[in-house]
Image (cartoon, rainbow, N blue to C red; front, top):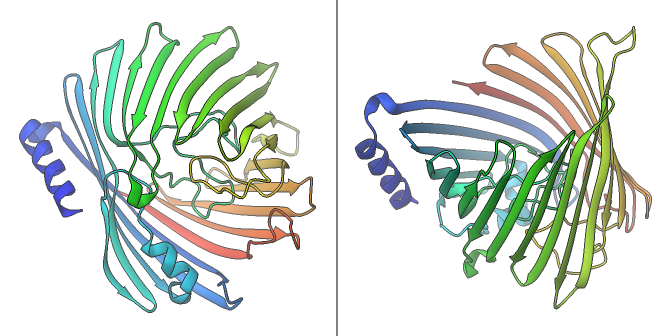
Length: 371
């Protein structure tokens, strides 16, 4: 880990003048209560300090984001959590390490992002740890095979990067062809990922077609998003085949709309999305695709700005196959220009083989300070 940071720092300070460097950061405190694997109520506190450095000179730019995370409280002592903390991150470069570990205390640091970019206008090349964000769904993104994020994640905005080279050819203002290659690493169970994506705009609709080899399976994806009147519509479909599961598909389709009734002058945001998972019956759980226990899920989102400083959001996911639900309300307060405080909950419903039966209720308060 230290070697990685030293290399990035030397490159930054010797390759770019001091005037071309910009520094920023974010401190996050996440206090939450939930039950551990032994069904005991536990209160735990996550502290994260993220330091970021950006630089550029002409067509060459770079970005570095370095995290220190301190997790303390009852959940750290849970054997299941201890195993998860000891597991290496699924990245090619080993750029994280535990500084100190105690029964109720874990202090670690990691390279969250670190990439170098060359932009020549029609051609863009980016090398390093980066976010490959593909897909247009509001809740599920089956075509995102580099960084899939489950909608039940504790921190949805914390998206693990991938160590890869990305080459994009922008043949028009809206059209591009993108190739991404990420190498494998056996110790962290990171698979080789190769993908080619074409995307363009036709009238009111954006179309993207993706093909690639993710680990031991071939995949093909289609992503369509656009406007029908005042509503936004979107559809993602991914078809894949491997030796264990055979051929399977995943589909998400939905629409979103902002409604302006007299009682809600700021506009009520509404979204409805359906997710089909053809691999739900597979015993193979992989970090390279969306996983679910049920084949059919239906999600809904509501959002409303109560005042310029207060916003309410609600996410509800229903298990259409085995009965059950996942409910997550949140209330965000912009305490100042650079401080946000959010209170939220995750409330699972269902028993037995339901999609959300394995989840525990969680209640949290999060504070973010940007500097």
